[in-house]
Length: 310
Image 1 (cartoon, rainbow, N blue to C red):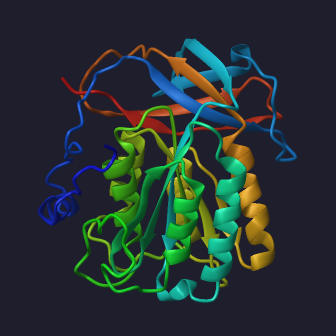
Image 2 (tube, rainbow, N blue to C red; image 1 turned 90 degrees about the horizontal axis):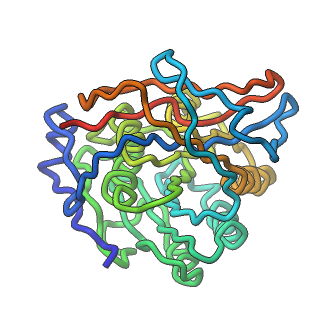
């Protein structure tokens, strides 16, 4: 059964205070030495580059070169996707278009073996559909998203932990999607957020959201839907640190184009694996840099990971 117990309000409060980083309920921590990266490569014209091999890449950890031991081209590897929809008042005029475009996006991107879930966030965070490959369930969940819906009025599986501060719980939503929902999933994992990224109510902070994604190997992509530009600094920080993309969306016209770009990104990745030269199991954060030998190319990949702890 895929549904897991939600993180308690006590735990999320402790996390906000910096007191702990709790393992998801029921999760078994397996210490492995192989670090896996998913990378997308673009040329200087921003076009996706295919047909590369491992000799085209260089990987550095904390400035030290690493030997690539595993490499493959991933166009059909199953994806587990979390779709997060901002339903706060700032999205009132775009929500209808967002829902229509999101449904079409899932129709294009999902293939056999893929799973997706749908969450909304405003004054709290609601799980509208748990992981499923049933498109009709996902479409119905997307359609139930509504601006500042009263807690419990639109749920199919029950609410995730709620903020008591009021406002837009963006950081809490990303944290819960990664920590509570994606942590036990295998393979490629991505979170796609539709929001202006202006958080006004979370108990957790941006670093907590980033860390939860990094610890669960989840790539965060953001469609920054805001007529006034939204908080681009927050959106860029979250996507850069996890290996995702941030695309600014100011109108319904380019919303569809933005979804197309993310779809292409998800289906045009290279998997790069290496065994770190640093063997310490100290739980420390390690910085990663992926470089291309062809300097006309640039690679998009996560910027770090947390080492296992004995």
